[in-house]
Every structure is written in C-alpha cells, then in structure tokens.
Length: 375
Length: 71
Image 1 (cartoon, rainbow over the protein chains, first blue to last red):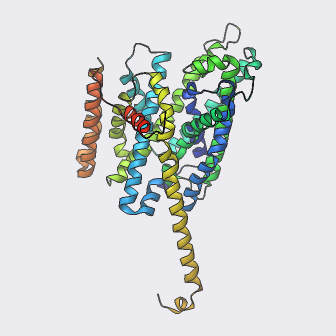
Image 2 (tube, rainbow over the protein chains, first blue to last red):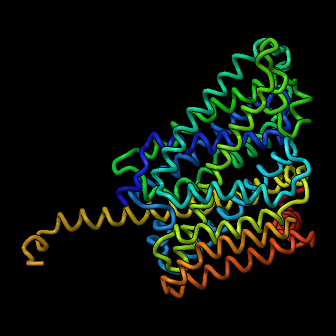
C-alpha cells in the first residue's frame, strides 16, 4: 500500500480536475449573466457536505469509504452501502464517458459512431486505473498545472473580444432560480468529489484531508468562476445559455492577429484530459467496490471487465445531447442519496462509534482494578 | 463496421486479460469477470446493430416523476 500513497497536493489536484471537468456541462446553466454567482454560491453551499467528507476521513485515517462502511455497518450493511456507491460510480463513469463522446462527435467527428470514440476514451482511463493511485495523483497534478496555464492563456488573449456590459444586470433572477441553479452546481460540480473519498485508503499518512478537499475545491471553484466569466463576457448571456459547449464556442472567437487562430483546440485538449482523469477515478472506485463485494483481492484485476460494463451502460444512456442536458434536472435529485444521505449515515455512525470507543478507553484508564489485573 | 469493432475489442480484451484471470484459478474472479464481459458484450453488440436497449436514465426519470420529486 505504501507505494500507492497519494500526497495532499496530488489529491487536491484530483479534486480541482473533478470540479473543472464539469465545465463540459456548463450548457446546462440557466441563470445567464448570473451563472458565475451560482458557481460561487454552489461552492459555499457544498462546504458543509465537503467538511463531512473530510471528517469521515479524519475519523478513519488510512481507510477508504468502502472499508469504513464495512467497518461501521458489518458485512451485510457494509455491502449494501458498497453496492449502492459502486452503482453510483459506475453510472457516473458512464455519464462522463457519454458526455465526452457527445462533445467529440458534436465538435469534430460528426460522422463517427459513438461506440469507437467511447472505447478510445475508456482505454486511456483503463491504463490510468490499472496503475497505482500514485500515478493518478501525479497525472492529476501535471494536468491541473497544464489546464490552469491554458485557462490563464485564453483569459489573457480574450481581453480584445470581451464586452464587460454582458455581466449586467447582476442579480436579475429570483431567489428560487438562484436556489435551483446553486443546487445543480452543488450536486453536479462539487459533491461528485465523494468518489475521491473511496481512494482515501491510499492517502498520505498524516496528511490533512481538509487541506486536500478545501484547497482543491477553492482552486477549482475560482478557476470555474473565471471560465464562466470568460464565456459570459465573450458570448453574452443568451448565447451562453444556448450553446451546448460554451467554452469551445467562446474561445473560438479569440484570435491574435492572423498568426494565432483556432485556439479552441486548447479547450478540447483541456476537456479530454480532465475527462480521462474523472473517468479514471470513477472506474477505480467502481472496480474497488465490485472487488470488495465479490472478495477479489486486487481491484485492478477488475478494471477491464468493469470498463466493459461502463461502455455498455454509456451506449444505452441517451439518444442525444439535449436528452443528456435534460437528465441533469433528474440527476441532481437522483445523486442526493449517494452524495448526501449515505455519507451522512456513515458520518453519524462513525461519530457515535468513535466516541463510544474513546469513552471505553477513558473508563479503562480510570479503573484501578484494571491496572492491577494481569490482563 | 461498428459491430466488427465491438467484436474485435471483445476478443482483444478477453484474449489478453481474461486468459490471465483463468490461469489464476480463482473462481470468484473468473465468475465476476465472465458476467461483466458477457453483459457488456451483449448490450454493446445489440447497440452496434442499432437495436434499442432500455437504459437506466429513462427509468430514473420516470421513478422520480412518479414520486413527485421532479416536475
């Protein structure tokens, strides 16, 4: 296990990529010029849930979510939790694979069938998942640096084409609309990081999960806000809401004289790399869950068969991109048990159990008869 | 063409990876491996022939609508 250790910085990078990879779904935004505010509100609203994830990890250092569940709820209860979370990881993986296949088809390969594209994306993710988590962590760090550098580059170059009036009128939506979009952002962008908790069995010994989670989410949400602002200021609120992939559309407009054009390839580069990372994380989580359910010692042995299931699932999920965007409304409710209720149950049980153990230890220390006892 | 790619992918992954699993002789691994591959291949094969296979998304949306959790 020692060779698989993921440092705080690498885990934080993985969380940044999890947050930023959701930009592919920014076509689901409904608040127009106030979308950037909903990103910030979503981050703030998710903070207590993220704190709960960190607390679970703090109570059981060196253990992943699945081992914690089995430890707390016993063999049967633990396996129910593992089965549910594995299904979520599998389904999320299929959704992300399909998102990126739709993106590739819509942007570049209109005539290509989706199945071969999904195979190509999945094979890369399989390679990452079949290696140590240490590799996934290092890969995440390198990709985060590259993605953030590309983001800054496109923002600097966009100064010539932005229209600052596109941001007005600010706060032009009802509280109900804000609440709805904040809820969507919270579930789709931030709380999907629950799957990172599955890998916490390989987290750096003595490292702070709070630093990894909150550092990653802070950097990710700032970068995501900048992305949304860049797209808004270039495209305007109406085009921002109409476009399926606003980042691609916005950066397409940017050009530096006549020698630096077609910068949208940077966006494709960013999105595909972030997508591969997220798919790899989901795939690892799903195969770890299946391995634990069926008593398979090495979860890496199940990465390829689980990827086959993901491929099959992603091929039957939707017929088109609008259907996928429409599913987000249902997804935010569907994801609640996995992102909130199950972790909440795990957290409460963990608090009760660890406090009970602490009290037992205190009583044991205070009892003089115990000290005289040979046992 | 897509069907051919699916069959090729199935044979390639089975040939390279499943062989090692069978050699390991662990029955639970072989069992779960076979189930994943066969379900995956069956669904992919049908999809590659453009035959509709019901997915979980429609079921989830219908269920949430029945429970009045979404409009």
